[in-house]
Image (tube, rainbow, N blue to C red):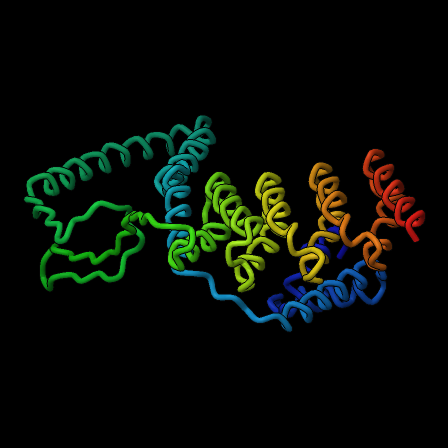
Length: 316
């Protein structure tokens, strides 16, 4: 086994999902390859760290939306039926029979016979009456899933029970607990970048205005968006909403410093430097600024970090 193949099996090996034979080959490879052995140790360490965190169950809304997207994707995929694959094999076989006249003649006879039987079969199917489809409790909304199937004995009648996702809306003040709960849900569960950006902006504006954001749930949602949202516009708005709490909440300060070091968007890293001005004298902040001033890929950010460090030195 080479390193390239071993890399494909390492994750399955760490979770005990690898077949015994392949697992034995991988262990023999690991015994003589330090690089792959180190990769296994990294995966196992990550697995141990993840096991210490409490597992979060996905919400019913997220599961429903995921199933709907999966069904839509499957519907758009081109169908490759068994009949089409059989047809391809058939034509490949017949190409080899061009030099075998006897077999070709037999194949022709079999084709005529099969076509005759198929015509009889289709005629019998067409003559059989189809039962009408009856919908009960038909409502607007996409079909989420099928919950049950019951066939009437000795007949072709089938009853299919299914659930629908019906869109709803609610209107209220930003101070309303239900409105806030829906906004918090939108920061994580929405499939739309625009919806996430709007919800984060509204929550950030509430925090900046000092409207009861001290319960921790909104602050935590903004930190999650800053750390993990893939859209830079959403992360920038979350960073803006955390500004009032940098001086008093070390968790917020750590989230902003992480963004300063790791965020791929230079605009967000630059804004993070501006936001930590009230806590520039903090030792952890100075350490991060020192790292950024020498290692950041953006020359402007390196320059700004050095200027901030110089100001702190002058003040001290």
